[in-house]
Amino acid sequence: MLKKLFFNWKMNPASLSEASSLFTEFISLAQFQPQISLVVLPPYVYLSELNQQLQTSGVTNLKLGAQDLARYSAGAYTGQISGQMLKNMGCQYVLIGHSETREAYQLSHEQINQKLLQSLESGLVPILCVGHQSDKTITEINYPELSEQVTTALQNLPTEWQTEFYLAYEPVWAIGTGKTATNPIIEEVGQFLKQELAKLGLAKQVGILYGGSVDDVSIQELVKLQQIDGFLIGGASLKPEKFKTIAQVVANQV
Ligand code: PGA
Image (cartoon, rainbow, N blue to C red; front, side, top):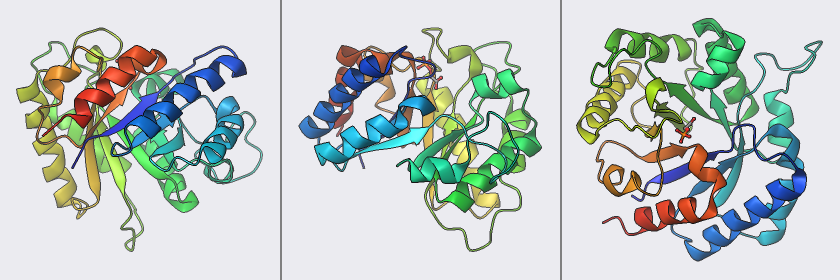
């Protein structure tokens, strides 16, 4: 199966007109590469307008997601956005526990778990990000830390839950640095994450993603990964020539 691509715009761009033109590039990419599944994760404030653009375009292989959601379903939580609001706005996916969000809000494992449960309750597909917060070297994999991040986030799931979900391996040192983990390390971690998920009875519906400096150059090597079902792309998702090359390389994958 072709690898799925997730594009995290982070806190970019600065205006609705820029967001709209950038999204137009994704719509034309989706039309040009109908066999590839694309998910764009823009800032909340652009979702409504981009959803209108998406509906008008008629493309079916491009979806919208959000970069975070509240731990609660509704109520007196100033500044928070609920899963239901996102769903009503046309979102189908939501990032949970991105390392930048974990750090900015000092999120505990329990809070990540609450967000995950909220995403399921709202009918959003979660993309749970895990990665070594405490890495010292590029080759050192902190398995206990990864295991804790996965198992604590996935506690108390509804037993009937069988829907799709994604686990994104993003070593913190690789995010926005131009350094990617090597393919053998990503394969090893991908295998480890699948084993952890199997212990929780969740192996079947989970796609494993890699994120961290995926761009038009690094994709040439990363596309060869066997254990990985897709990529989470940050910086390169703001540059049409870069994300179009990434999609082309994935489309050419055999
Ligand atoms: P990057 O970001 O591609 O700019 O490294 C990835 C991410 O933050 O998900």
